[in-house]
Image (cartoon, rainbow, N blue to C red; front, side, top):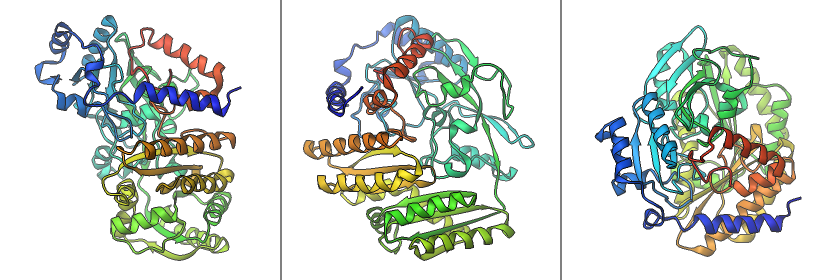
Length: 491
């Protein structure tokens, strides 16, 4: 049985082993790949698709997380699955680390090249290969972003609804099992991927559901698709994805409502879901976040725990849903409703919601974001949020809280002075306390950010040695030489 003390010791070990990687000195601490190997890469993809420039390597050595930059030795831009396959085989034969790169918008250090090697940028594989309107699916290459796909779909009456906020690449979203504000209605990537083309460590190419298959369900063999969804580039490199599409709703209505307490806001969420109202989004913002929201995006909302709501559906059916939800909010102390039916006002509202991480950083000029997330059964959400706010208050730091409360997931965006070691340590300790509290209440240490570098110890605490051992066996089967995104997810 793991103890909290043991977990904290393990976290200290992880911090000491990763914190020394900075953009200034990381490359010098790791063995460089040979000029001959770089030439072999160039022979595969061409000179214009290989770079050893410091600026390019550093750009590919960090995501949007708090983790220090760890640049690769070389960055390679693939233009086809064949390129990816040949590069993987080269890296595997020479035991050189290989890290897939989409857009760099992750929040747990998932693309940092902790052991140097090759970062494989997939952004040039940007073709939308097919759209089947009647079947509600599309196939895309690895570099297509969610906004790019939706722009392409605009005249078809279809959309891809998974929205993590950032304009992430869709195959990167598969790799991290992304979700976001629409998950309460449309689910996560795990529910919306029908098939994937994956390049394995040794260069073999597989289709997880069979080549060309795009059915909405199957019972044919092992579910390899969901094995690779959420694998964070440690089992294979996703080069194509077949995705489930949805019809654009006839009508959309958004609203903001404020509450006296966190309990009132979360109780309203539970009541709404119990009534079977098909909400598209239910977002919780605490009073600190609302204050940041107002200042950054020029709103004048009441500074109080609040819910952002959105309804999708036929125009003649939304009025009843809106009326019922308004009554439930009032029962739980909700007030100051602000409804937005106009598309421009709705877009402004949700754009501001997606910019909330920047709003939180603006509360402390010069700060950098330290973000963490926890997910628990909805009934446990008030306790976890309230106790997390206590942790933040006791530490004397700023910690705005945002939650996808419809599925029990919430985030804290800490604005941190990276040069202040004491402050950084306080925030790291809060993140551990939050995760352990969530796990003690039958939750998980991460609902959507993933494990990456920073939550490996928590993953072991959450799953236990036996289950984690099975994961390690899977890793050894798919990647026996350990070249794929080493140092992530598993120790």
